[in-house]
Structures are given as structure tokens and as C-alpha cells.
Length: 183
Image (cartoon, rainbow, N blue to C red):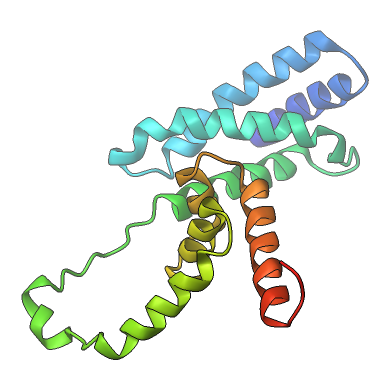
């Protein structure tokens, strides 16, 4: 019975808000805040309880951004729970525990002879010297060391898009050079 009244009340506020009633929208957000806090709290571990408010705010922001996608003929709480569930799953994925295996004790077993690769490294460094220093560093970090474009861009104080463009242009320049074209 309470679920039906909650659905009816929240749905009515959402429909009124979609029709332009700013007061209904404020009441909806206020009620959603009170509704979502315990919903997230039940799903979080005690160690993560402090994240509940962040999840509530992220969900409210998603509701705001996606409010025009709400189908008035469907239950509002189902739509809301789908958004909240996705925010919760994103949170769990972001904060997943990743085991760390320390191999320091076994380092001699895994040590490799890099002397054969030294000439290759020198050749790569010689080639990368033909592009601007920052571009060479971005190419080295993303293509050779396995860093993401976002990580490399952050290290160099530039946007991800600018880093992608620099990497693309640098690689294009190198390909042209080795294909017999101009730099």
C-alpha cells in the first residue's frame, strides 16, 4: 500500500514538474533525497556509508539531466530505480577492491635480460626525437608504456582531446617520414 502511495505521489510531482511547475520540481527533489538516502544506505557496507550522500546527489543530477526521457505512461519509481541502480553499479565498479601482488621477493626469478632490447629502445628514442618533445613523451607513454590518453594528458597538463590530436599528428608525421614523405 505504501509503495503505491509513494509511486502515485512521486509520479504526480514528476508529471507536474515536467509540465513546468517549479514548486512541484523542488518538492520532487526534496522527496527523492529522503527516499534515496536509505535506499543507498541499505546497499552500502558500513565502511562505505559516507558515500550514500554522494550517490544521492549523483542520482538527483542524473534525474535532472534525463527528466525529459521519463515516459509518463510508465511507473516513475521504476525509472528512478533504474537510474539509482546504474549510479550504484558505477560506484561499486569505481571502488572495487583490486588485489595487489607484490613480486619484490621473487624479483630474481622474474628478472629479464633487457640487453637485446637496448638497441630497439635507442632506435625508438632516435625516431621520437624528430617530433616535438611533448608529443614524443605522449606517444612514448601511451603507445609504449601502456598509459591511457587521459593519464598522459593529465601528466602534461593538457586536455584529453589535445593529447589525442598531438599523438595523431606526431604518428602521422613519423609515418610520412618513413614512407618517404615530408615531415
